[in-house]
Length: 123
Image 1: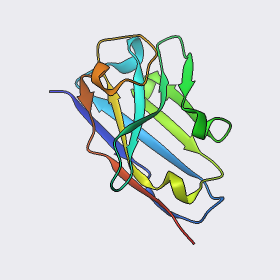
Image 2 (image 1 turned 90 degrees about the vertical axis):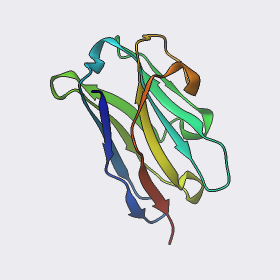
Image 3 (image 1 turned 60 degrees about the vertical axis):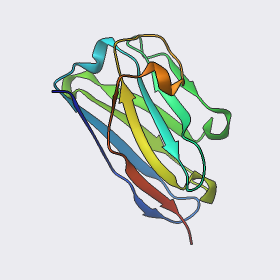
């Protein structure tokens, strides 16, 4: 049974930082692309960042220069370091993976999803 568990969300002030983690069990992510997505209240889910097995990365324009995705294959975990957070980053953040190694942010290309972790950026 494949399980993805996100952690690290919380309440942070604008300009602050958080590091999200996505730990997998039942599936080795090191050979596959892992993506981070987010869904803000009243909005559709959007892709934030992804990383493939070669550690190539992709970011949506709104987070470039602020977010960094990385992976620790020994821990079967992918991270999303989020710096200089803005109120518009408030959302539930999900990680996802699957059998593709294609670098993309199309949610329909991912097979397994976590339950999400909430990030709130507010003063």
